[in-house]
Length: 72
Ligand code: SF4
Image (tube, protein in one colour):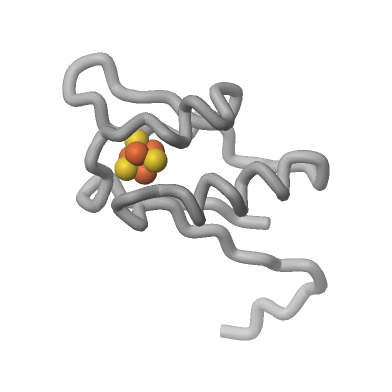
């Protein structure tokens, strides 16, 4: 699973940090989202999907990459 955040879309709501503080943080200066990890394990997948779903700015993108279907 790949996760990316778009700081241009982040509205600093902090939902992601509330749900998964080990994965997301907010910048001390502008309160925009910071991704604290780059690699994720299966036990984290559900919370990552939820974070993407709940993000009011649509700033979190979760890409499933189960099998090696990266053909671009
Ligand atoms: S939930 Fe979305 S809008 Fe809110 S801080 Fe996290 S990335 Fe930004």
